[in-house]
Length: 482
Image (cartoon, rainbow, N blue to C red; front, side, top):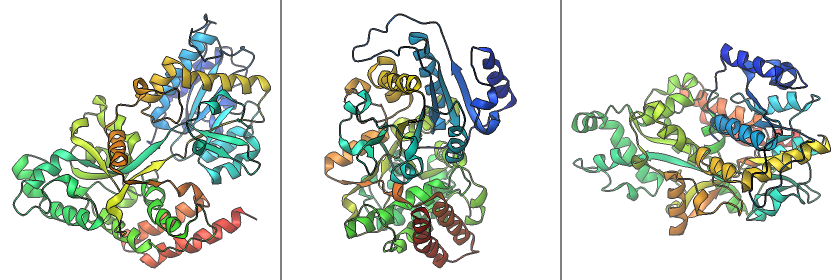
């Protein structure tokens, strides 16, 4: 889910151009979103036809079609490029993977889908996304991919009951925390808690964060840290604001849906917006920077603050594990230092709450593509979830928890955040479902994000956030259902 900013330099554009001579029938402009290499990461893979790969349950493509995957996840771009190249080496089938630039997936898809050589494989984020792209979504009911799903819950169906999309990654988010720093804090005189596990409510989380914020210099002097705040910066730059206008906003939506016994609505009531306010207040006050600086703070900065042990708490998800443990980043934090706790907002009974777990990652095969390209795409997806190379890449290189029965223990991601989620579930805690896929539009998210930022900067009131949340929801829902 992480949307790291990918900067495509001139060298990348040259590399793209170099691939134009490798038997492609289209020009670079036809394959590059918006006609610019700066808008996407592109790699074309081709090779000579190889003997069968010997993997049972895998049907190599006939070679009559090709695959063009418009990838949603920048952090998995390199892994997809390598996997596509491997598949081409084995089958001779051309696979192109283009990764949309940060925050531009919808507009990139709109641009690419209208072209002659449109994506054969793309992604929607749930029911709202499906409504926008349903006419381009092939029915996958008879596909091998669908037959390997472990639960119908991971099939995205249209009103006709057709399988229009299939989830490929089950992800989890919460508050990532540094166990080492928290354990050291617990040894201080008059520490609020004696062990990190005692944080099981917003009240306790706030008390601990307040105390760390006040005593950060004491922690630094005693243990040699360079803490700047309890929480990383809640940046409202486009690379970071999705954590709060979407993922954090999921909490009040989830609890309202739970109370009302619904799974979507045309009018959110905002019952839990005071709880949303108090967690947002905590994020922006017990932090590494002043609230007035949040407009320019990025997702990379927040990641670095946590990685360099400048903050104890960091709202993000399982997808961050690879970045935080990548030795090339030079971070001080180690896998053993980290775990994840639920996002507590002060709701009664939240001590029994688990992490936020779900998916907004649904593969869709382009129903407008040629029959050959459709079959090539289905064959490629089947190979991804059945071959050793594909499963290893999905589980280990990409760090996905997958919903397919082909992934056994040997293809389970070694990720401390996934282990934390499993432990909470085993303990009997109730996972928080991902309801933000029912948010009526991106315009709604942007309205809430703008209101959150203005409130943080002191240029707007919380009433404006409430209005963006409640009134904006009704307006955007009505506009999208005309």
